[in-house]
Length: 183
Image 1 (cartoon, helix red, strand yellow):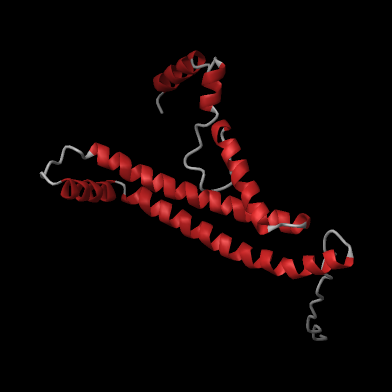
Image 2 (tube, rainbow, N blue to C red; image 1 turned 180 degrees about the horizontal axis):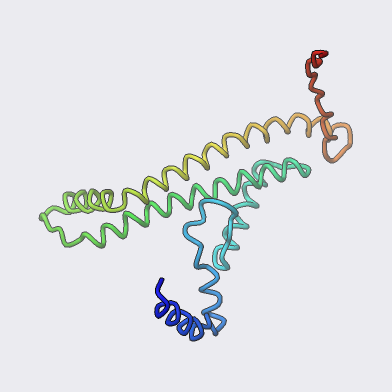
């Protein structure tokens, strides 16, 4: 980088102070947020109640008892939330594609929709492939969690029968290693 370019960048840097209003700060805090399918679930204020209602309903339907079951049920609920979000994003991509390509007038609404859908699929191939990849990962995560939850049920049932609230931790399994050869 040349000296003059570096000097210009430094001068411009002094003029950029970032967002000043609360609305601007709130908006800029979401700059890195893309789709909410990976990583930690970040719920924005309008979706918070829907997310909480969704999780409560799943935990209730799974009849989670104790800390382990509640944690596993929450994990299952979050996986289903992400799957629903992936479907909603895919539907949005195709809806926007239908709007963007509505100028293709073949005279038949079904043919027009098929052309628009094909064009959208071509233009959004990368995003659709990423959605599919994320969805597969979420499904695998869910398939791993559900057997753990179902496996905890018999132990929890025995504990409730004996009057305890949650099952005691399972004893750690001791791994026997072969003895090292003497040198």
